[in-house]
Amino acid sequence: MGKQSLFHKITTLFREARGRMQRGQVTRDDLFIGAVLKRNQVITDFQLKQALESQQEILKQRGRAVRLGQVIVDLGLADEAEIIRTINAEYQIEVTSLADDIRELLAGKYGAYFERLPKPRLPMWAKMAAAVSIIIVLTMFTLGMVVLNQQKDRLYDQTVRLGTVSINYFANNAPIPLLEDDILRLNTLIREAARVEGLRYALIVGPDNLIKAHTDVNLIGLPFKHFVEDPVTREQDEVIHYRYNRPDGERLINLYRTIQFKEKALGQVHVGISLDFIEALIRQERLSILLLTLLLLVVGLSIAIFYGIRFTRPVSHLVRATEEIAMGNYQYRVPIRRKDELGTLAGAFNRMGQELYKNAMAQKSFGKYVGSEVLDLILANPETGWLKGTRNEATILFGDVRGFTAYAADQPPEQVVDALNCYLEIATRVIIKHGGYIDKFIGDAILGVFGVPVYRQDHVERAVRAAVALQEALLQESRNGNTLLAAVGISVHTGEVLAGNVGSQTKMEYTVIGDSVNLASRLNAFAGPSEVVVSRRVVESIERLIDVHSLGPQAVKGRADAVEVFKILRIRGSRHEA
Image (cartoon, rainbow, N blue to C red):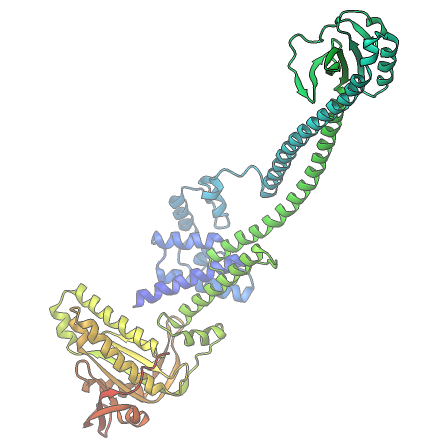
């Protein structure tokens, strides 16, 4: 027990040292030095405890931390040369004095795990900006291609319709002049149509394949031949058209149709319209899309950088909080107040830290087997000495195994420990379930208390119901072969007890003491296996609920008068739970 208590104290001091380290009061080197010196047997556990306590006292007096190594030297527990030699041998580094930054030397030689990982090339905001840029560029490129192609097709169709109007005009007005071979009227007709913007030429070909009229008078009377051999043509409403390029590079569309009079072909009319204006319009639209893309990039990058920084800053806070929690500083809180998912995460993280702090304080203050209401009482004011000694009415439940010494002598140690743990586990569960708490384990005995530190008016009833329920649970489990469970006797007594923290600075526990506790223990001698015995005070408190059999007045060690003992036969009503 002494070694375990000392180990627990050192562990507690180290945990406190980590907390002080995070507050800037103790360096990481202290943790390294303490662990290394103890591991290499330069100092003992007791000496380490002494040094840690002295360091804590110096901190309180001076308001600043002194390195643990220096404290050890000042106390005469080890000399500086021996400490430095041990650290250098342990980590293969070159510490010259206790003032050196050991953490930095270790990082320089070996490098922390995360320090050896490849550093990210881009911060989060830059990655978000790059992602937004790629999305904008791809979106605008795709949208631009689709829109420009659609616009190009619409402009082409519009050009074809314009040419079709001109073609139909010529075809409807040229038959009579062609029949009369009136060259003048045909050319007058052509010159009027030539005023249309974008129309590069118009011509009429007679049945003899000679040009009868042309916007270029120099070509009148010459044979006509198509501008492209075997062109790829398209026909729409008797108008045939195809594309071709002039020698000067201009792109044209040639439209033509047959001139008929009373279903007799008199010739053809041709119209050429430039397509370069379409390309000019497309270039203008492409420039507009490019400028719009640049504008969206500027806006998108600004938004991405803003929200990227706004997003990564809370993440940095969360990383810092994780490091603090990992070092045992459960009271660290993430300074984030946002109404979004990160705010929710920060709130959940803070609640986690609060719960971890509560759990740590609960284990430190009251041990493991404590009911929820006792925990609430502790955590309502965990830093103060709330468990000072007080006198209270309480009910004591005492359980002990009949013939345990003989049982332990006949069975293998492992089986004895397993059987005993099973018994104590069941007892703990039942007692806490009925609103009590486990005061202590005493070998094969268990001491449960009802009514303190949380007072319940029906604590006597709860204790008796817990005793009966415990015997039933033990008998049920004993059918699995654990005969020790069927040999437990339980006694219950109620009266005034003194409850509070008892112990020293090294070891302290919450317990109950007094005559009532002693009497509950003495009464257990009258309980046979699987029996529950109680005192008269218990019977008088819940007489209406129980059937008992009097064992008569019994002589009890430490008392001048005999004590009447009763065995519980039955308890009426439903079981009482916490």
